[in-house]
Length: 78
Image 1 (cartoon, rainbow, N blue to C red):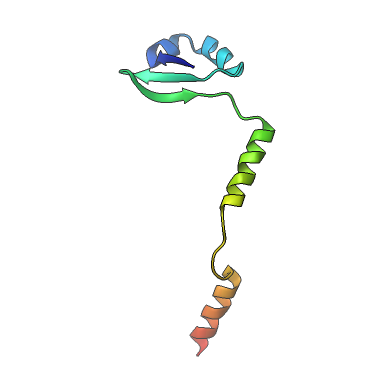
Image 2: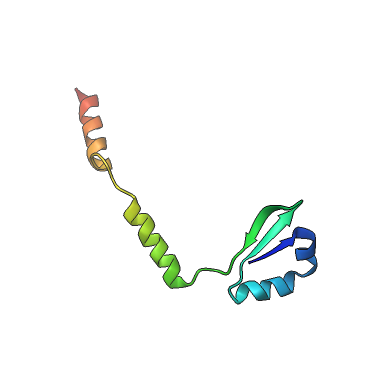
């Protein structure tokens, strides 16, 4: 993992992008503090896997939205 100042990154952006495209991670620093990170894009399989993990993480609790709406409308009529 390469750590480089923002100013130096601006002067060498094209070469940094080539390194990132090869899979390297680049941390951009400003006053010795990390302010950004250049990462290669996820492959389609990686994106789909993370989306599946996210969906699996979500757990629906309580009644469905349609049931909630029907019950609220019924209560309003009474």
